Length: 131
Image (cartoon, rainbow, N blue to C red; front, side, top):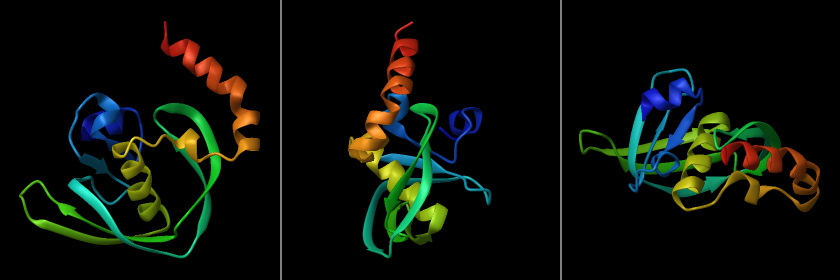
């Protein structure tokens, strides 16, 4: 999964994005790649709007408002508990990948005006994926 994320290139990847039905995501925001199994966000605070994209809709970015700080718990590859506070980009990556694991796509986070303005680009991506 880490290699797929790097090739894409991306800063995070959820297992179900590549057909793996497990509660796992990988991430790397520049300080080394990590794997989290059975991730859960236990706390959030603040609010932050930032341009967000997704490997599932390459090349498209939208301002998305999410909690600024999140506390994530899960398990690492050694079976040890993981407890991480992520703010700014790290917190956003955690939330984005958990959205994927919970079946929520980035486009579902768009407000109606953003969605309407992006319909043409989204339709083009959908048609390209059918080829």
